[in-house]
Length: 106
Ligand code: FES
Image 1: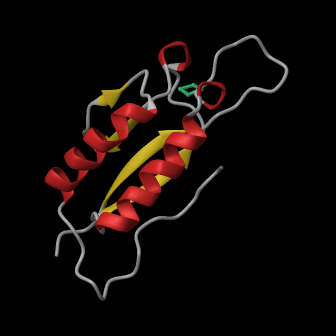
Image 2: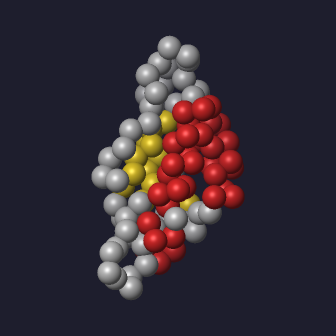
Image 3: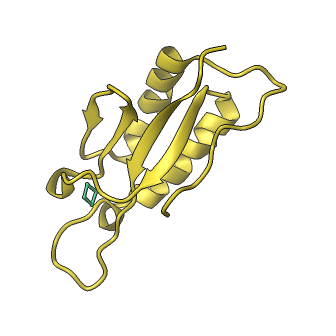
């Protein structure tokens, strides 16, 4: 089976700042929904919560790495399409594999 790729989701939140951030725009809930969908569908991708792509004004931002296109301004309504795309690009894991989701920097 092919090694799992990583889907990186910015969950940065700037407390006490007027500078926009993905966390202020709901990216934690998006990460929760995507992680749940990846688990439920056994998609062969690792989900990482990261802190800032440097594209803060157009978030929430996320991308498949390496080499995936950025998604900007993601909403909860985009999650099913994101999961469909991840499954098409990354495939699924067999039943006996460890679950791929872990948390980093959340
Ligand atoms: S806060 Fe998400 S890209 Fe900077």
